[in-house]
Amino acid sequence: QVQLVESGGGLVQTGGSLRLSCATSGIIFSISVMGWYRQAPGKQRELVARIFRSGFINYVDSVKGRFTASRDNAKNTVYLQMNNLKPEDTAVYYCSTSADGNVYWGQGTQVTVSS
Image 1: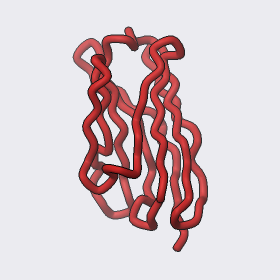
Image 2 (image 1 turned 90 degrees about the vertical axis):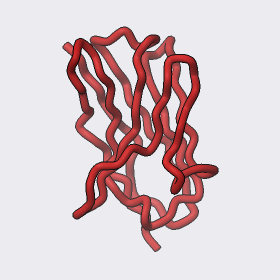
Image 3 (image 1 turned 180 degrees about the vertical axis):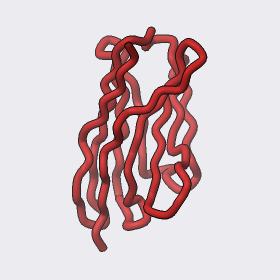
């Protein structure tokens, strides 16, 4: 059974930082491509960062230079370090992966950035 569990969200002021974690189970983590997504109220879910098994990472332009994604294969966990947060970063953040032809999502963690 595939499980993705996000944590680390919260309320922070503009310019602050948060570190999100996504613990996984039920997948071969070391070869899995992992993604961080977010969905703001009234908007479509968007890709924030994609972490390939090689370690290569790509980011949406709006977070480049502020967010850093990483993975720890020993802990089957991915992280999203978010610095210099802005009100427009307010959203529910999800991690996601694909396995066995299915797409799996965590339950999400709320990030709220106050101005």
